[in-house]
Length: 150
Image 1: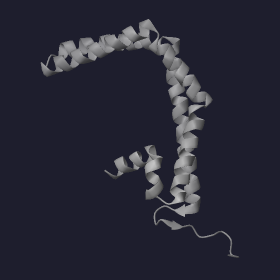
Image 2 (image 1 turned 45 degrees about the vertical axis):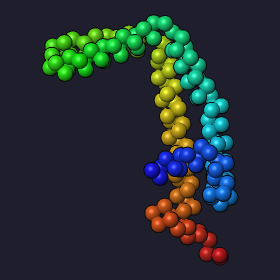
Image 3 (image 1 turned 180 degrees about the vertical axis):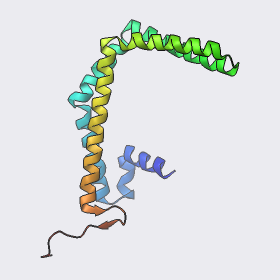
Image 4 (image 1 turned 90 degrees about the vertical axis):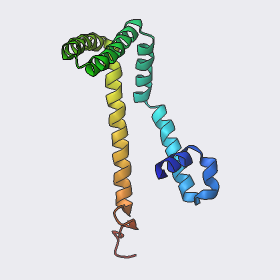
């Protein structure tokens, strides 16, 4: 429930104006800026181009549709306890997957997904490390100053 409220608050910053102090608004604004930066990043642009190519590639769409159909067949044969047909269809799916993996744009798309994930992991790590330097996360207290003159 709390996560839903937080997500709703992030998506509706106008609602937050009365609810949170100014610093929270600053944080939400910075997250929106970060999202815009990510949206315009080279990694995301490559991903979108590859995604568009896949959506418009007739053979890829045929293979995906065939695999989905086969997966539904597996569910049906599993409910009938027909292991021989399940094994046969699984082999057919593997062949379809092999053909799909052999299409260069699919590899480009998969690689772009990996690169975006790595970028997001790097950002999350940087945020975590930066926050941890400033705030003791376990206790919620400010970290002691590194300077003795304060």
